[in-house]
Length: 220
Image 1 (cartoon, helix red, strand yellow):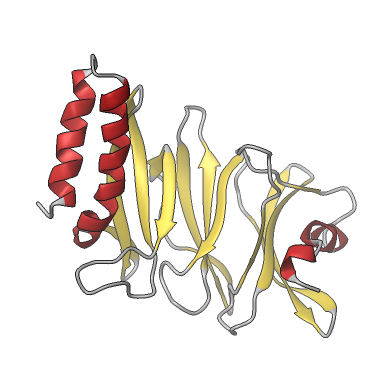
Image 2 (cartoon, rainbow, N blue to C red; image 1 turned 120 degrees about the vertical axis):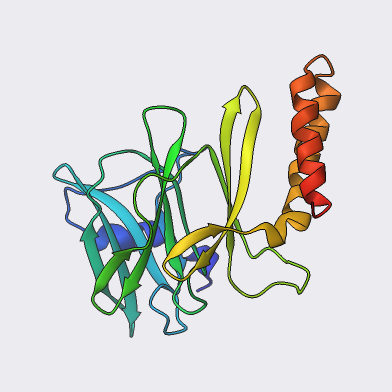
Protein backbone atom coordinates (compact mmCIF):
# COMPACT_ATOMS: atom_id res chain seq x y z
CA UNK A 1 0.00 0.00 0.00
CA UNK A 2 1.36 3.43 -0.92
CA UNK A 3 1.74 6.25 1.57
CA UNK A 4 -1.01 8.21 -0.20
CA UNK A 5 -3.43 5.33 0.38
CA UNK A 6 -2.47 4.80 4.02
CA UNK A 7 -5.05 5.83 6.62
CA UNK A 8 -2.82 7.62 9.12
CA UNK A 9 -5.77 9.01 11.06
CA UNK A 10 -7.18 5.54 11.77
CA UNK A 11 -3.79 4.30 12.95
CA UNK A 12 -3.37 7.27 15.28
CA UNK A 13 -6.87 6.84 16.70
CA UNK A 14 -6.17 3.17 17.38
CA UNK A 15 -3.13 4.13 19.49
CA UNK A 16 -4.62 6.84 21.72
CA UNK A 17 -7.31 6.65 24.43
CA UNK A 18 -10.84 6.21 23.10
CA UNK A 19 -11.93 9.55 24.58
CA UNK A 20 -8.98 11.44 23.07
CA UNK A 21 -9.26 13.59 19.96
CA UNK A 22 -6.61 14.21 17.32
CA UNK A 23 -5.83 17.92 17.16
CA UNK A 24 -6.80 19.77 14.00
CA UNK A 25 -4.64 22.60 12.70
CA UNK A 26 -5.86 26.17 12.42
CA UNK A 27 -5.38 26.08 8.65
CA UNK A 28 -7.72 25.93 5.66
CA UNK A 29 -9.50 22.58 5.76
CA UNK A 30 -8.40 22.01 9.38
CA UNK A 31 -6.05 19.08 8.63
CA UNK A 32 -5.19 16.65 11.41
CA UNK A 33 -1.90 17.24 13.25
CA UNK A 34 -0.21 14.11 11.89
CA UNK A 35 3.27 13.77 10.37
CA UNK A 36 5.01 10.90 8.60
CA UNK A 37 8.76 11.44 8.85
CA UNK A 38 11.90 9.95 10.36
CA UNK A 39 12.11 11.62 13.77
CA UNK A 40 14.34 9.10 15.58
CA UNK A 41 17.16 8.96 13.02
CA UNK A 42 16.95 5.28 12.05
CA UNK A 43 16.25 6.01 8.39
CA UNK A 44 12.62 4.85 8.56
CA UNK A 45 9.63 7.20 8.91
CA UNK A 46 7.41 7.18 11.97
CA UNK A 47 3.97 8.67 12.61
CA UNK A 48 4.03 11.70 14.89
CA UNK A 49 0.80 13.33 16.06
CA UNK A 50 -0.79 15.69 18.55
CA UNK A 51 -3.90 14.75 20.50
CA UNK A 52 -6.01 16.17 23.31
CA UNK A 53 -7.04 14.08 26.32
CA UNK A 54 -8.60 15.13 29.64
CA UNK A 55 -7.74 18.77 29.08
CA UNK A 56 -4.09 18.15 28.17
CA UNK A 57 -2.36 18.06 24.79
CA UNK A 58 0.14 15.33 24.00
CA UNK A 59 2.84 14.83 21.38
CA UNK A 60 3.60 11.23 20.53
CA UNK A 61 5.33 9.08 17.93
CA UNK A 62 4.62 5.50 16.90
CA UNK A 63 6.69 3.08 14.83
CA UNK A 64 5.67 0.15 12.66
CA UNK A 65 7.19 -3.15 13.81
CA UNK A 66 6.15 -5.97 11.46
CA UNK A 67 2.74 -4.45 10.83
CA UNK A 68 2.06 -3.43 14.43
CA UNK A 69 2.39 0.13 15.71
CA UNK A 70 4.13 0.80 19.02
CA UNK A 71 4.87 4.10 20.80
CA UNK A 72 8.48 5.30 20.82
CA UNK A 73 7.87 8.70 22.40
CA UNK A 74 5.07 10.45 24.28
CA UNK A 75 4.88 13.60 26.40
CA UNK A 76 2.44 16.25 27.53
CA UNK A 77 3.14 19.50 25.71
CA UNK A 78 2.20 21.75 28.63
CA UNK A 79 0.25 23.85 26.16
CA UNK A 80 -3.46 24.55 25.81
CA UNK A 81 -3.44 26.77 22.70
CA UNK A 82 -4.66 25.84 19.26
CA UNK A 83 -2.01 24.72 16.77
CA UNK A 84 -1.31 26.72 13.61
CA UNK A 85 1.68 24.81 12.21
CA UNK A 86 2.91 21.23 12.54
CA UNK A 87 5.86 20.07 10.47
CA UNK A 88 8.99 17.92 10.54
CA UNK A 89 12.28 19.02 9.02
CA UNK A 90 16.06 18.60 9.44
CA UNK A 91 16.73 21.86 11.29
CA UNK A 92 19.24 20.90 14.01
CA UNK A 93 20.41 17.59 12.52
CA UNK A 94 20.18 15.68 9.24
CA UNK A 95 19.22 12.33 10.76
CA UNK A 96 16.14 12.40 12.96
CA UNK A 97 14.05 15.36 11.91
CA UNK A 98 12.87 17.98 14.38
CA UNK A 99 9.18 18.60 15.02
CA UNK A 100 8.18 22.23 14.47
CA UNK A 101 4.99 23.45 16.14
CA UNK A 102 3.26 26.81 15.98
CA UNK A 103 1.12 27.58 19.04
CA UNK A 104 -1.60 30.16 18.43
CA UNK A 105 -1.43 33.28 20.59
CA UNK A 106 -4.39 35.45 21.54
CA UNK A 107 -3.23 37.91 18.90
CA UNK A 108 -2.91 36.89 15.25
CA UNK A 109 0.61 35.58 15.87
CA UNK A 110 1.97 32.13 16.74
CA UNK A 111 4.77 31.01 19.06
CA UNK A 112 7.49 28.78 17.63
CA UNK A 113 8.37 25.48 19.27
CA UNK A 114 11.09 23.10 18.02
CA UNK A 115 11.14 19.65 19.60
CA UNK A 116 13.55 16.77 19.10
CA UNK A 117 13.00 13.10 19.90
CA UNK A 118 16.04 11.78 21.80
CA UNK A 119 16.79 8.36 23.36
CA UNK A 120 15.52 9.77 26.68
CA UNK A 121 12.36 11.37 25.29
CA UNK A 122 11.29 14.66 23.78
CA UNK A 123 13.49 17.72 24.24
CA UNK A 124 12.59 21.35 23.55
CA UNK A 125 15.35 23.06 21.59
CA UNK A 126 14.41 26.73 21.97
CA UNK A 127 13.03 28.74 24.90
CA UNK A 128 9.55 30.28 24.76
CA UNK A 129 9.05 33.69 23.23
CA UNK A 130 9.80 33.42 19.48
CA UNK A 131 6.66 34.66 17.75
CA UNK A 132 5.72 34.99 14.10
CA UNK A 133 2.81 35.61 11.76
CA UNK A 134 3.88 33.30 8.93
CA UNK A 135 6.43 30.48 8.84
CA UNK A 136 8.40 28.87 6.02
CA UNK A 137 10.87 25.98 6.34
CA UNK A 138 13.30 25.18 3.54
CA UNK A 139 16.87 24.09 2.88
CA UNK A 140 17.86 27.47 1.44
CA UNK A 141 21.00 27.71 -0.69
CA UNK A 142 23.83 30.12 0.01
CA UNK A 143 26.68 30.79 -2.42
CA UNK A 144 27.96 27.23 -1.82
CA UNK A 145 24.57 25.60 -2.40
CA UNK A 146 22.32 23.67 -0.05
CA UNK A 147 23.75 21.85 2.99
CA UNK A 148 20.96 19.41 3.87
CA UNK A 149 19.73 21.43 6.85
CA UNK A 150 16.66 23.64 6.76
CA UNK A 151 16.50 27.32 7.49
CA UNK A 152 13.39 28.87 9.02
CA UNK A 153 11.94 32.13 7.69
CA UNK A 154 9.75 34.04 10.13
CA UNK A 155 7.41 36.76 8.89
CA UNK A 156 6.34 39.09 11.71
CA UNK A 157 3.47 41.44 10.94
CA UNK A 158 4.22 45.14 11.22
CA UNK A 159 0.96 46.57 9.95
CA UNK A 160 -1.72 45.63 7.45
CA UNK A 161 0.16 43.54 4.83
CA UNK A 162 3.68 44.62 5.81
CA UNK A 163 6.03 42.18 7.53
CA UNK A 164 9.50 42.10 9.00
CA UNK A 165 11.18 38.99 7.60
CA UNK A 166 14.20 37.18 9.03
CA UNK A 167 15.84 33.89 8.11
CA UNK A 168 17.36 31.64 10.79
CA UNK A 169 19.58 28.57 10.90
CA UNK A 170 20.56 26.26 13.71
CA UNK A 171 23.85 26.97 15.44
CA UNK A 172 24.92 24.86 18.41
CA UNK A 173 22.05 25.06 20.91
CA UNK A 174 20.09 27.92 19.32
CA UNK A 175 18.60 29.58 16.25
CA UNK A 176 20.66 32.45 14.84
CA UNK A 177 19.94 34.87 11.98
CA UNK A 178 21.36 33.60 8.69
CA UNK A 179 22.18 36.37 6.23
CA UNK A 180 23.99 34.00 3.85
CA UNK A 181 20.67 32.91 2.33
CA UNK A 182 19.29 36.43 1.85
CA UNK A 183 20.17 36.57 -1.88
CA UNK A 184 18.00 33.48 -2.38
CA UNK A 185 15.09 33.99 -0.01
CA UNK A 186 14.61 37.73 -0.36
CA UNK A 187 13.92 37.32 -4.06
CA UNK A 188 10.66 35.77 -2.87
CA UNK A 189 10.09 38.58 -0.37
CA UNK A 190 10.76 41.11 -3.14
CA UNK A 191 8.14 39.51 -5.37
CA UNK A 192 5.63 39.73 -2.53
CA UNK A 193 6.16 43.48 -2.18
CA UNK A 194 6.33 44.04 -5.93
CA UNK A 195 2.80 42.67 -6.15
CA UNK A 196 1.64 44.90 -3.29
CA UNK A 197 3.20 48.00 -4.86
CA UNK A 198 1.55 47.18 -8.17
CA UNK A 199 -1.85 46.52 -6.57
CA UNK A 200 -1.72 49.44 -4.11
CA UNK A 201 0.41 52.20 -5.65
CA UNK A 202 -1.13 54.75 -3.26
CA UNK A 203 0.56 53.04 -0.28
CA UNK A 204 4.18 54.27 -0.30
CA UNK A 205 5.06 52.23 2.80
CA UNK A 206 5.15 49.06 0.71
CA UNK A 207 7.74 50.59 -1.59
CA UNK A 208 10.11 51.07 1.34
CA UNK A 209 9.68 47.41 2.30
CA UNK A 210 10.28 46.45 -1.33
CA UNK A 211 13.50 48.46 -1.47
CA UNK A 212 14.74 46.80 1.72
CA UNK A 213 13.92 43.33 0.34
CA UNK A 214 15.67 44.12 -2.96
CA UNK A 215 18.75 45.31 -1.09
CA UNK A 216 18.90 42.03 0.85
CA UNK A 217 18.27 40.00 -2.30
CA UNK A 218 21.29 41.76 -3.77
CA UNK A 219 23.45 40.55 -0.91
CA UNK A 220 23.63 43.88 0.92
